[in-house]
Length: 348
Image (cartoon, rainbow, N blue to C red; front, side, top):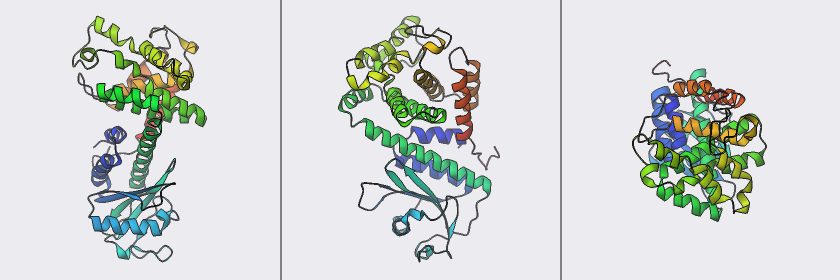
């Protein structure tokens, strides 16, 4: 699996179980790691950690889980430094397990912490390039945990939960798209150095940016072929409809501009209000770019996803017409960072 496909697949996952399968297949193909496991705890949790594994017997998972807890999730071992059969940590060794070499990678996201273990049944030393692949995979797992945590926090808000569950029943694809846009928006916001309050606002706005599609007739919203001009005019109403749906909820006042204007363009040819240039607030421009990126890299009923390199060309082509030039430059840097991995088996 090409690294960009893997990254997109993991972020599209709705559960850690799904992503562990993708991660396991990828690591088997790239570095020959046959077995992996992940142990996670939350700060408020007092029982044993949650365990997720790929291609591993339950007895091996249980042994590693016990070892991870005893070793405080290997916090004294730097990411990427191997733990071998003849090593000990405070009297703890791999002798009780089936493995000769384990590479631990620490997980610490919001209230969740733990360790991702790459397990080998023989002695194994990873090359610098292989370690970079592992670190990027660990980063992707961090990001997925962030996404899942954000979902949980978001759904605690009763008014949002009702609206979002209604959208989920109508069009689950749009719901997944909104989560992805929130994720990409937060990556770009962090790159820009936004404060935590701005990042939380940005993620919430991105998650609700397409809520106006609730009012779009199903035969148009989920049409498998090209829309007619009249049908596209109906679709174009969803930002203004979303604004109307949310405007009377006091807790979302600050996100209304993003919901209403996420299809505005730098050159003034967007909708619904034809804003241009600096008339479009920064957070709106961030969500617009993240929205377009996820749309282009997602498979729809009427077309396949575009390759990331083609998407890069599209973003550059539309600088200063559809998208903000500075944001495109930063977003391309993010794409480069995410795609640093190269599939060793294909020599890419």
